[in-house]
Length: 237
Image (cartoon, rainbow, N blue to C red):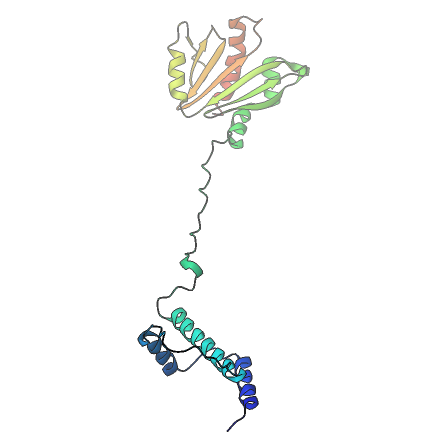
């Protein structure tokens, strides 16, 4: 018969090796034993009075640990079980809504078109600013863009505004204003409003308004200057 020390060493070696699985028959037998064992306490069985030997305690502990590993493995590895602790599900990724497009400033091409109708030298010659010269700068948004021209001292000597789309409707409105005068020698549809000293030149749905001179000049003098500018602009619209 093997002595207690040999059994003890064998048990310690088995525990330290850390078995993590058992044969299928052992798993089935353990589960069957758990399900069929009658859970009753017999109060007539006297309490053990002799302490168990170390070897027996080790073997009993090893058997208990093996049963826990087997039952736990069956529960975790059975089909359909979720590996997540607590049964939690991964949260779906929420994408931030894309930013709505915002209205942009007038395209550079639109500003270059209106300022391309007249050069600085054209304005200097047609307005009579001579040696004072002319410098352009563009402004505006939406369908209307404006190119202003200033002389050397910084005074605005000409304002040219190009409107499209909607230029045709705007021209008809200007033409129907009280006191509007049709200008026939521009080369396209044109009308002059003496109340504002503004010349309207239209070609299709494109409208160009021309305001030249200063408020100190009479509307008729300004009309002469604006007509000369309108003839040049009409060929470039």
